[in-house]
Image 1 (cartoon, helix red, strand yellow):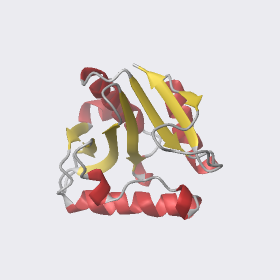
Image 2 (tube, rainbow, N blue to C red):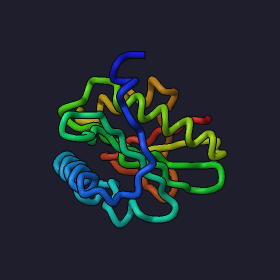
Image 3 (spheres, rainbow, N blue to C red):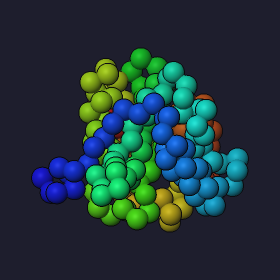
Image 4 (cartoon, rainbow, N blue to C red):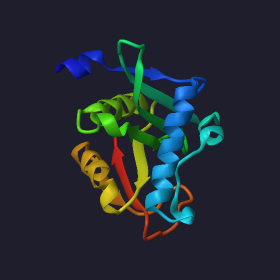
Amino acid sequence: MNALQQELDVRRDDLSDPRIEAFMQEHLQDMYAVSPPESVHALDMDQLRQPDIAFWSAWLPGADGDMLVGTGALKQLDANHAELKSMRTSARHRGRGIARQLLSHLLETARARGFSRVSLETGPQAFFEPARRLYFQHGFVECGPFAGYGPDPYSFFMTRTL
């Protein structure tokens, strides 16, 4: 276990901290910068607060208090199937294993909650290549649209069984 793994605090989050809202606003801005509006499936704060969504934040301790470095959510699609949403690592902290730890936490949580499958939608653009690589490394495979998504040249769908 490296020092980052020991320090990272992954918390179930109620989305009340204003730092979360700013972090998620940056996420939405990035998504709209690389995809046309009709192909952006990132959730805003009101959508993230829906009862079928559980949200986690990842924090590193700092001299001025904890620093938000990542987020992720699980959306319940049905009793056996969840969708991974809002996966993001702060630009400053990318490449340090935060997304890997957060994804592992979310997959373990999904399994503990009785889900047998987790799916996600990401983009095919180069911007999303690190995310796709991470998902493939964690056992996800490409699949077709699910849960109301339709075919979209700006969407790349993935799934895995637990």
